[in-house]
Length: 306
Length: 261
Image (cartoon, rainbow over all chains, first blue to last red; front, side, top):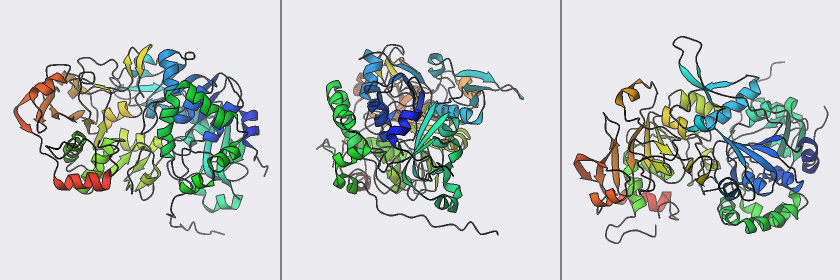
């Protein structure tokens, strides 16, 4: 088996290209901030950033100047409030306009499903009597070809050039296992042309094979594997570290003021050479404090059929 | 304990909103929960009027048993000990769109008299004065959950005659149209604000003031509503939160007073 294990710097340099549509997915859980920071650090440009919930990571990336367009379904800082850098771009065109294309959650999920399944569209029972289709012509009412011709809405496939997902563990060919909130990472990975899997731990293939039901993304769709513990901070990895809610609250203060945000980006992204520096800058006590207690699952017996 | 507990009444505006909303969950089997107040409401209902209530989160959790109050709907405490954790496709397709969800909470920056909600923009879409988060799952929850409960603070800028943008549909104002929709959901059935509680007229679908919170007058409601509010002929008073409800809220659900201020 050929190893795809590489560094974050090389993975982003090789896989992410200016002008790409990039999806760093993960619904609150497993959002790979370290990959976003590396994209900012490498000063990628003109990206279309797709995510159900842009979250603080896309606020940082938009502020970092990498994006020209945003595709999303819920634009906020979960549990806190607004994403101020993105709002400045949309409301005040400061420091320039940002193109947007918006859906609902189910609409975004089904765009990835259509992309992953090689379908021209996906039909859903959303958007009835909503103004959303009026501002997004890609959401189109269609009649069922069966029976009474019932009206549903079609959403188009989303096929990112690059999807970046984080997993608790993966083997060196990219077979990735995830537990906890699954979001739409599987769909976003299968839909993409190129995939980077970042993980807390690279494990032996035998570890993956012992529990195949837990494999969410198979290595066959993966181009690069990066081992990077705590890569999701301030998001979380179930069983590894907690969501850093204090930082999410703090981001509201940082991002409200463009200059404060610039200073933060310089100090926490541009002036650091890698996520290892970021971990060191926070200090070991910070990471210790985010470790959860234990709640192991019971094991199942797959049986041996020789 | 929250900081704005009225000395006269012994509870805060948020606390009576939470208590009144929780009572609205009596008998519900499952509930689609949002962050903030709805989260506390559902957890209070589990301790009082709906002990078997299954908490459902759009992040993909069915039957959550949170051991702490989550800041976001994607908190790890919702996963540990849950009945099921699913992909978001499964949650929205098999649970929500298929009609398994009894009750859901929605809110917004603007609501109109028929319970239509705006969570998208203030001002025009192309040049918004305020860019709000957008739909998330709201526009589909509004259609598919059997009934919708709304919790919002009441003000003229939020209780508006005309929405700037309709993100999620409520009632149309045309009973024949509503009956012909064929949706699983029957739309908003109640609104709880810091001033009172509302139902929706069974024929016209119009928001109707059912009770005033203690100390609130009809004039207060008119001052905070962007239309002439319809008032029930048997207008009552919202029961104050009980000692037990306040104890759960203050000691177990939000001891730091993050949401109940």
